Image (cartoon, rainbow over all chains, first blue to last red; front, side, top):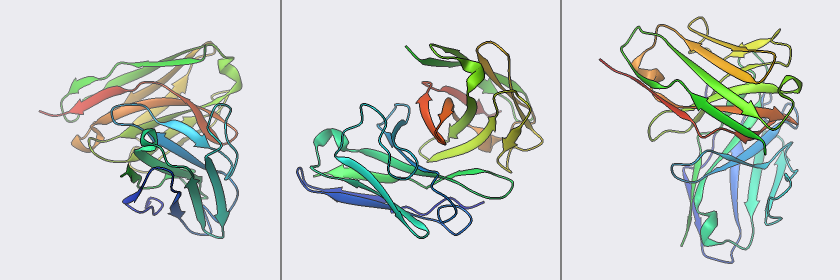
Length: 111
Length: 116
C-alpha cells in the first residue's frame, strides 16, 4: 500500500505561517475524520500534535491547527519558532487489509 | 506518569527471529488498543500492527503479515514476535497507545538490525 503524499520539505521564517498537506484518496483521508499529525525531532520518538483532523491534545500549542478538505488534510503552524523545526507525519485510517497508513513525512526548516 | 518502554531489539541474521516487548505503566492497559510502528534508518514512519483491548482482533501491514505476531498480556505488556526476518525489517520499533484514533503516547523505541 502506498503512503499518503506529503511534500518532502517546507520552510519558513520565524513568525510566519506554513501549511503541510497530506493527500490521500477516498478510502483513507477522504473516508472519515481519523487523521492525526505527529512531530518528530531527530533521534526522538514522535509526538502527537493533532487528532481527528483538527483537535489538539492537552499541552500542544494553539499555534498548531489541522483541517481537511476532500482527500487532503492539512497542518498549519502559525508564528513559526525555531523549536518547530522537525519532521511532521500525517496518519489516516484506511479501508482494506491495512487499517492505518502514514504519510511519507515533511521536513520543516525554520530559516 | 504514563510510560511505555520497549526492549528486545538487537542484531539478528536474515531468517532469524526476535521478540520485542513493551512494558507500560501509569494507565489502565486493558482499556486501550496498542500499536507497533517502525522507522527504517533515514526513512519515514511505517504502521506495522495493532491489537484491540481484549486481544481478540489484530491487524498487520501486508509486508509483515504471516511473519510477525502482535500480542498482549492482561496486565501491562505488549509484544511483537518477529520471525523470518529480512534486511528490510531493520528499523527502530516503537510501541504506542491508541486513543481517539491517534497514537497519543509513544515509547523511546528499540533498534532491530537484520544483517549477516
